[in-house]
Each structure stands twice: as C-alpha cells, then as structure tokens.
Image 1 (cartoon, rainbow, N blue to C red):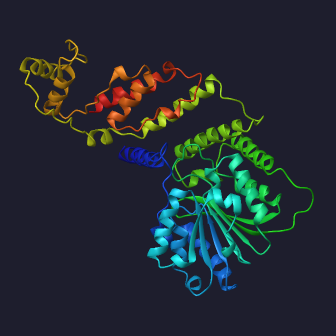
Image 2 (image 1 turned 90 degrees about the vertical axis):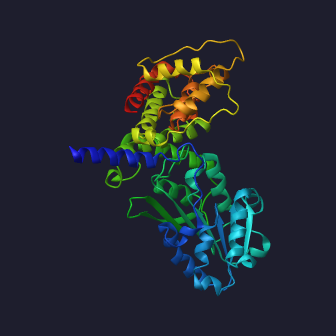
Image 3 (image 1 turned 60 degrees about the vertical axis):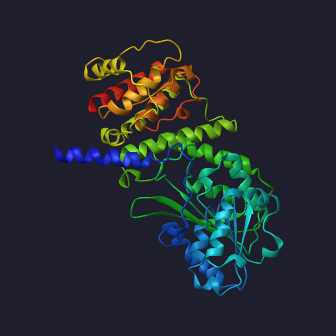
Length: 433
C-alpha cells in the first residue's frame, strides 16, 4: 500500500515537473552550465580540433541565447591561443547578454553579435569571413515552423563552403513540455540536409537522467542535379514524421524506459497536435482541421493533465491572505452574518445592497481577518461574458496555472464537454481542504 502511494506521488511530481513551463516562454539556458551540460561537452572536442588545425576562423553560433557556448569556449585553451573569433546570432534582445558575458570573460575584442534578421540578409560580416567557419545550431530546429526551417536550411545551403563545418544539436524528446514546438526525427531532418548537398553524420545521445537528443556534423559537398524546393522537402519530411507518429505512437525508441509512460504519451499528444497545426499552416493534405471529437479529446487530455499535476498539498501550502482595507468603517452586523455563514454547512450566501454601498469592501475586509485558513478567490463576473474566463480566474486563484489559450482555437468545443473535469477537480480541492 505504501509503495503504491509513493509511486503515485512520484508520478505526480514527475508530471508536474514536465508541465512546469508549458504555456510559458521557453527558458534560455544559463551560461553557467557550460561545464556540465552534456550537449555542450560533446561539442568541445570537434570545436577544439578544428581550432587547432587552423590559425584563424569564425565560430558562428546561430540561436546563441545568453552565450553558453561562448562560456565553454573561454575554457578551451586552444581558443585563447588562436586567432579564432566568436559570432553570436539571435534576436536583438538576447544579444546584450552575450556582449556583457564577452566583457566579463575579457574576450570582447574577439566577440561580435548579429541579429538573425541581419544574418539572413548578409551572412557573416566581411571582417569575420575567414577560410574556416564553424556553424553551430543548438536546440533551434524544434522551435521553428516548417517555413522558418526551410529559410534556415536555405541560408546554410547558400553560404556554406566545403571548408566550413556544420554542427547541429537538438532534442529527440522534451524534458519539459513546450507549447507549439515539435522535435525532429533526426534521420528525417538529415534527409532534408543531404538532398541539399549537406552531408552530415547523425548520432543519438542521452543523459543519465534520460534526456534524449541528437548530434549532427559534416560539410557541404557539390550538389548534383537541378535545384530543389527546400520548403517542399521540409514539408514532406514533417508529413512523414506525422504519419510515423500516428502509426507507432512513440517519439523515440524505448521511450518508456527513460521516463514515465504517462509523460511519454502526453509529450506525444502535445507534439502531435503542434505538428498538425504546423502542417495545416502550409496546406498539407495529410492532415485536416480537427473535428468536434478531436477537439474534445485533445482538450480533455490537456485539462486532465494540468489538474492531475496539481495536488492538495500544493493547494494547502499556497494560501494567500486578503489584504486589509485601510480606513474601513466597521459593520458589525454584516460581518457577524458572514461569520455565521462561514462556520455553517451552507455553500452560498447572498449579499444585498445598493450600488456603491460597500458590499465588496466589507467582504474583502472580513476575509482579510476571518478567512479561517481558506483560500480566497475573488472573481469579477461583470468583467467577462465567457465561462472560460471565469474558470481561468478561479484556477489561477487557487494556484493552478490553467490557461484558456490551450483551447481557445477550438471552434467546436463547448463547456459542457469538459465540465466533468472542472467539477470533479473543484469538488476534490473543496473536500481536501
């Protein structure tokens, strides 16, 4: 019995961890993990080898984030002793961190930053365009859609030379759920590269904690035959992946051996939905817009996953008191009536009074002092005409990070279809507390 309870608790904790960033912006990797990150460590040797073989060169880090790769380069002795430079490419708001890090590492004379927009327009600046360029792309392809993937591969196809090296790393499964993003099957991505004259070697990796990713490395070779439609190739590869996932129901081989089965299934469902959306955006014929049953099933799975990851312990530990109202005029009779209501078994009370008579103020002041360790949730019903917004306010009030964005695009979904999930969960937390 105790073992079953512990197993259930472990499952809840693991599921909560998996969903912890879902619906939020994906966190940018901290440069301080440069020495311990498994992906970064596996890049160190091929980069150090290339640096030792040439006096000058450029390391182009596409999607550099806050500069974790730069932090690792600072620990490589051959980089300091060479004439190699680092060029970080990302959105403008992220490049400030890279330049700040370069100054802290005293590498600012050998570090430059470029926006992705400028990189696509003009490639590497002339003063950094050496005979040897190492292009590193880490955890980018799973964050961009089909059209953006085609644009990035086209950029590489246009500018890479036989003397340049391409190093790619990306995820096979998500250690944390990412809304709208889709991992690549590495062999399918490699097919797209090879059809564009970029011949890469693929190795799948995993950490001791079960995180799964792949590495790709290689050079460009002269392409034989006519030019290809890169966007069409990317679309075709993603269609193959969609069909494969539908048939096999897995993101990675032996996925269940490295994480809980429920998380593996949830990851597949979320990614499959995201991939379906991407294919719909480019007019793919292998998918169709989700019908009523599809929308209902997807919504139920998403909502059940969010509610099941929220425990009664979480609810009880986050009680936030209501702030007291300054200069409140005491209304003993009204507060005594509310006190009697709270200690009774009644579930509803009605407070009557004219407009601007202080009803809401009295309730807030009373609850600030006599809530009896209950979590107070205040919902302004006058501010909305949608039941979804009311439910979102309620869930956020008890600390459950439910977002209406999960289901807002579902044209055929009605509240009646998911009402039992909300009702059961609300009853559970009311009884548990």
